[in-house]
Length: 266
Image (spheres, helix red, strand yellow):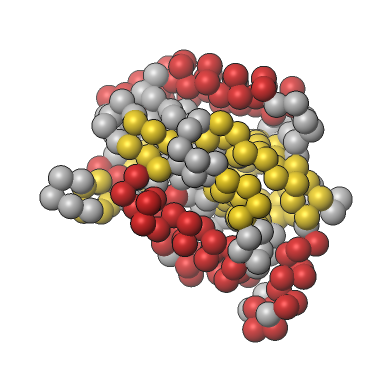
């Protein structure tokens, strides 16, 4: 297989999991082509900072949401990247977990976000992801029928050494499901996503959250699919929807061969 069809869903997820399921279901129903991989953004199941609502998701909705995604993967005969969901630990804090579901609806691999979004953008705009979440501690590359995908989440994109390690582990593609704030997205989104593709000679799939959310957050959107040479081959704007790309797998090797210094670390 030299080419694959990839889609990224751009969502505006809320604190209501049932509404999010309906939104995602409508997007799946609108697909009119065979896809090899569907990518959902960070916080796909629930978008909230409330510990109480995260606990409610874990107690009442996690299994329902994951069964829904598995059913969609099986129905559409496609792999699905669940950009992230809150996964509760025994210490009652959460991991921000990205999950790969195969075309038979089976969980094949997962990654827990390592770099948590603890930032102070201004006196009025502050974020503390570590309030409810713990960091993951493992770098993950998942094997798909057509290549290897390195798993990352959102704020990880600011740590290039992580992406170099994924490339060393054989990643042909890298996923960066995100919920970038409007402030940081406007300033840095395009530069960071393209840089991670260029410096590692990998495709990057970056599905994003967009719009105004119930918890007061505003996310940037502009989901992207970028080739190993840094070309944006598909992109969204500031509205919900789906972007598609026909991905030429031979470009990974070709791009790396054009920059001899790049192949030295692989």
